[in-house]
Amino acid sequence: MTKVNLRPGTVEDIPTLLGFTRELAEYENELHKVEATEEGLRHHLFGPDPKARTLIIELDGQAVGSAFYFYFFATYRGKPGIYLEDIYIQPAFRGQGIGKKIFAYLAREVREAGGYFVRWWVMDDNESGIGFYESLGARREKHHTIYHLEDDALDGLLES
Image (cartoon, rainbow, N blue to C red):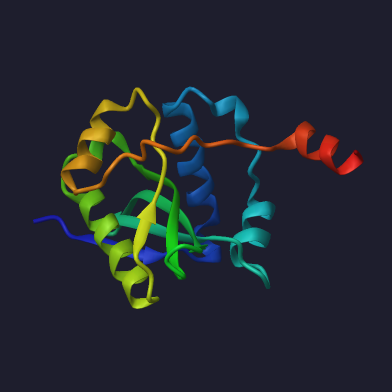
């Protein structure tokens, strides 16, 4: 029987985390957008003021995926939540219950922190992902649209 282990990422996992990031980007046909570097991950994930947390997903001791997440504050509820930025499991290891274990891990963590929810976004055409998320009891936001103010737009705002 295979054993799934979820553990926080460490500095030693940086090459693995970057590799899974590239695999995810390739899966989403966006490899050309990957700008992340080992140095950047070291600074932003494991430096003096970490901006996110990571999970390494292991199956029988072999790393098969990762997750990146961070806390945010929900003002209406006055409680924290977790935003799941990326979750990736190598295709050969999907469908074995690993995703459900990842969400249970995050649910436990956010509850222990006094929080009340986990949030993420999914590509509209990811039907298998959407089906999986809905099987967990997740609901789709109907009244919110995601916006990004990034790169040149950020610079333009700062210059105005």
